[in-house]
Structure formats: C-alpha cells, structure tokens
Length: 185
Length: 185
DNA sequence: TCCTCCATGTAAAAGGTTACATGATTTG
DNA sequence: CAAATCATGTAACCTTTTACATGGAGGA
Image 1 (tube, chains in turn orange, purple, blue, brown):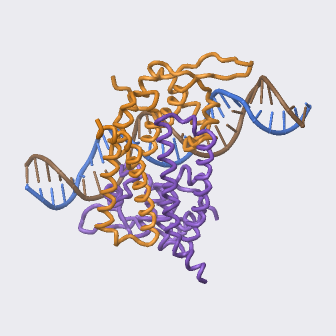
Image 2 (cartoon, chains in turn red, orange, purple, green):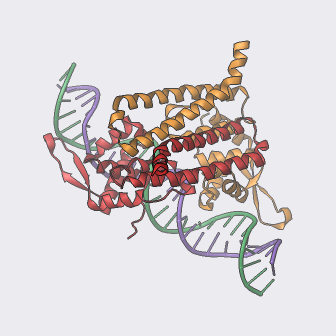
Image 3 (cartoon, protein in one colour):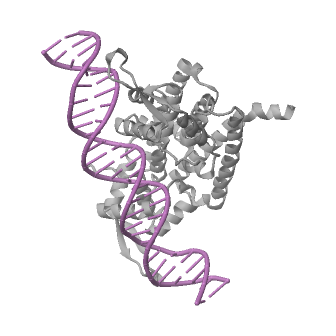
C-alpha cells in the first residue's frame, strides 16, 4: 500500500507527536524555541496540517480538559507510525540532496525509535554516495566553466560547495564506527 | 519608495535577465543544467513568474523572431535594475540565516555588477555576525538539552551545526583579504 | 479590572507542483 | 515522414503566508 506523501511540515508534526502526545500549541512552542525553528510556527500552517493528519488517520485528538483549560491533545495512531516508517524507509535521491536536504535530515532525526538501528547506517551510506556524486558534479562545473563566475557569484558558489563538503566530512565521521565494525568482523 | 517583495524565483529570473536578455526556455535550461538547479525548471512556475515580473515593469518582452523560431526574449528595465539593487541592499537577518539561506546566497551571487563593490564585504561582515550568533545559539541549546537528543536525532543536529560552522569558516576566508587591507590602512 | 499569555481557529491571497496541451522545427 | 526537441502556455490542486478573530485563565 502506497500512501500519498504528506508535506514536510506534516511529517515533522507526526514525528514529534510520535514521541509523545502534544497539542498544536505545544508544537508551535517547540518550533519557536528549538533548532526545529526552521519550521514555521504560524497557526495558519500548523492547525490545518494537524487536521489533515487527523483526516488521514495518522493522528487522533483525545479529549484533554486537563486543568480545565481548553486543549486538544493529539496522539499518533498505528497507521501514523506505519506512515512515518514508510517515509523514513525512502532512500536518498539526487533530488533530495539538491533540493530537499531538510527532508533528509528530518528523516534521519526520526529514525531512532521508528526504524531498526541498521536503517541509520544504511541511510547514511546511501546519502554519502549521492552527496559525493553531487560534489563531483559541482567540481566538474567549476572546472568546466568556473572561469565565467564573477566575483560575488564565485563566492556564492564556493559557499555552496563548502557546505556540501562539510556534510561529506560529517557523514564520513558519522559512518566511521560502523565501517570499523565491518572491517573488524 | 518601497516595492513589495517578490518571490525568490522571481529575483533569480530578474538577476539572470539582468546579465543579458533571455527567454523562458533559456532560463529553464539554465536551471536544469547548472548549480542553479536548486530552482525548479518547471514551466508552470517560470512562465507565470516572468509574466508577474513583466506586469511589475521589471522586465519587458522584445519581439525576437531571430531565425524564425518563436521566442520571447525578455530584457530587464531600469526599474528592474533598481528593484534588484534594493533587494541586494537588504541586510541579513537572523531569520534569513535560519530559514532563507538560499535567498542570502542569491543576493550575494548577484552583487557583483549590480551593487558597489564595497557592498559585498559589508554584506559578508553582517552575515558573519548573524551566523556566529546563531551558531552560539545552537551550541547553547546543545549544552543545555543536548543530552535529550537520541541517536539519529543527535546526528541530524550535528549535521546542521557542522553546516553552519563550515559557512562561518568560508565567511572568515572570504573576508580575510578585506580585513588585512583594513588592518594595513 | 485590565492586560497578558494561553490556545485554537478562519479567510484571503499567492506561489509552486504536477500534468496536460499545443504547435513549430530540426534531425534521422 | 516520424520522432525528438524547441518553446510556450494553461488548469487544478495544495500548501504556506499573513492577518485577523475569539475567548478563557491568571496575575498586577
């Protein structure tokens, strides 16, 4: 069964709710006060997204009434857990690397606890492959037509390249333990 | 006069057209075959965006008919040049760093040729300030509640941090020449 | 009581994605 | 001539942004 994909915000909300029931307001605060701040904390995005998740049957609202204050606590359903698992199971593509890096990192962030531990290293290894391929592409571009880059244009390009290379280094470090294990075994 | 902001895609198109007249197809090919590939090359995005730019008076379509093939060549207007200059003149904010890094790099890329050379170093210096501030925030978060980060969650966080640190390093390198000059003067 | 924060929502507008449509022109 | 490519577009759908709206709870 292939469930149609949800938006990145929806997956972010689903993943957070899977770590424990939460209200829309809780989630907004989370986005406003943690490194998850890359997501918008605007109610006009979050409440409709929660409703969509509920309509899909991935989360469900429980009656709260704790303390008397009006609050809608959402919990994840079994279908929700499965949906996140499916999403996490997607392999990184070139397009992910170029245009959806955020989605890759969100999938990674939610892996522990929602997928078998081996999934993490498999994901990282596949990501390293795609990333190194793309870095090679960028360097080929630089070699071929880098001379045409003007002053600040070149700077911007170098910023991008430096960013991708830093991720490659991070990946090598993150994969080092598992590689050592494999070599030793 | 404050012109209302345009979308990032619109600024990308405007900046490219400022470097020389281009058709929608030219721009699509550019997005499909260069590191500008972070932008979508879908006609459903580009052609409407070009029409919006034309309606604003930032670009204008010239009759082409070169070779007989049907092509609409767009050229930038004086108003377009001014609009891009205004946009480039915006200083980097925290929000830019956290959620609009792409826009920052696009502004930087278009600076040479569309703004006085001093603008580049001023921009980079302001960016360095915001970036270092944000990196400090992230490290404070790690120190305060980093223990709560689960396995793969921690990895994702570290990836982000590594990325920002790499940009900080890139910025220091990019600013090194101008700092040396200032020290010497 | 007044103000602030908690908490949830709605409505309009705009932009992008996806998919489809259409013709002209090279190229094999 | 057929197929691929050039070149431009349109329409439906979905999500996000922005701004506004509402009402209860708690503190000064």
